[in-house]
Length: 431
Ligand code: UD1
Ligand code: MG
Image 1 (cartoon, rainbow, N blue to C red):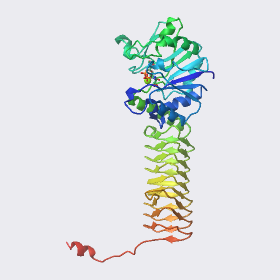
Image 2 (cartoon, rainbow, N blue to C red; image 1 turned 135 degrees about the horizontal axis):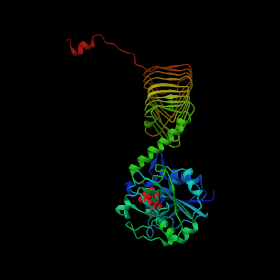
Image 3 (cartoon, helix red, strand yellow; image 1 turned 135 degrees about the vertical axis):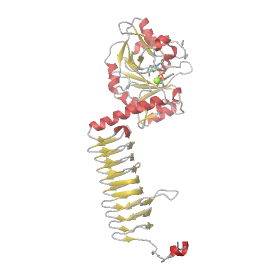
Image 4 (cartoon, rainbow, N blue to C red; image 1 turned 30 degrees about the horizontal axis):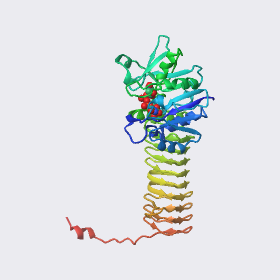
C-alpha cells in the first residue's frame, strides 16, 4: 500500500492528570500507542511517530515492540499543537494518513477506509452522543466541510453541533508542503491546529469530504474516564472474538482478558477471571475468580480462586482453590487446595496435599523443587528447596523435607504424639 502514516503523540496529555504520558497508558495490558502502531504497520511501511513530551520514555517502550518506525521530535516550543506536530514529517509516499495518537480502538480496516479516497484532503467525522472536547465540523449545504472549530474557540451556536472531527485525515503530501506554512496560532490555545488545514483547503476551492466513521472505534482518549470507556470497548471486542471461536464465557462482562492472550479449543472461562500477558488457554476450564498470568494451560482445570503466575505450564492438571503456582511445570498433577508451588517441576500421577509449600526462597536466592511421578505428598508439607523427590514416594502429612528423597521411600519427621489423660481438667479445673 503506497501510503505514509504519521501518528501524533507529542502532546502533554494534561487532561489525563498523570505523570505517565497519555499514549503510554494501558488498555487491556498494552499501551495506547502500541495498538495504533501495530495496526498502522498492517497498512504502511512508512510510519512516523511524532514525539516531544517524554519522548525518550515513549520511544524506548515502543522499541521493545517495533522496529522500522521513524521517530521525530516536534518543534514544540515554536510550533505547538497538532498542526505543528506534522510540520517536520517527510512522507515517502504521495499520500499521508495522519492519526491522533490517542485512538486505541482504531484498526487497519478503519485506516484503509481513507486509502480508497482520491481527493487531496479527506477528514473523518461522526455524530457524537456527547460532543464535548471534540472539534465541531461546520458543513455547507452540500455536506462538504467548510471548517473545524475547536471547542475552546467555538461560540454557543457552534458548540451545539453534534458533528465532530474524529481526528484522522488523509492529505496529499504536496498539499501539506504548500499549506502547512500558512497555519497560524491565532486561537484560544495559541496552537497550530491541523484542523485549520480544512479551512485553508476551502479557501483554495478544494472540496473537503468527511468520511462518516464509528464513534466508538474513533474515540480519542483524553481523560482517565475515556481510558475506562476505551477499555470497556476493547474488552468487549476481545471476548466476542473468543466466544465466536467457541470459548464459553457465561458472564463475559465480569471477565478481563488482555490483548495478547490466546484461548482455543473447548475452553470455559468462568466469571471474575483475569487472563493476563501472553497466557495461552487450550481446552481448559478456568473457574471463578482465578488469575492466569503469562502461563499456558492445556487440558487442565483451575480454581475457583487459583493464581497461576508467570512462566507456568500446566498439562492435564487439576488445580483447586487457593493454590498459587509460579514458574512451574505440572504434568498430570492434582493440587486441590491451599498450596504454593513455585520454581518447581512436578510429574504425572502426583498428588499434592492441602497446605503444601515449596520453600523456594532463602532470602537471597530462589531454588528448585523437583517432584517425580506418582508421588503422594501429605497435607501441610514443606519442601525446602533445592530438593528432589523421586518417583513413587510418600511424604507423611506435616513433614518438613530438607533432603532429597529416593524412589519408593516414605519421608516422615514427626515427633511421637503424646496424649496426657485428664490434662484439661487439671489445668482448668472441673466445672
Ligand atoms: C483533536 C482535534 C479535534 C478532534 C479530536 C478527536 C486538534 C486541534 N483538535 O483534539 O478537532 O475532535 O482530536 O479526538 O487537532 N499532539 C501532538 N502535538 C501537540 C499536541 C497534540 O503531537 O502539540 C498529539 C497528542 O499527543 C494526541 C493528538 O495529537 O495524540 C491529539 O491531541 P489532543 O490534545 O488529544 O487533541 P484533542 O483535544 O483531542
Ligand atoms: Mg484527543
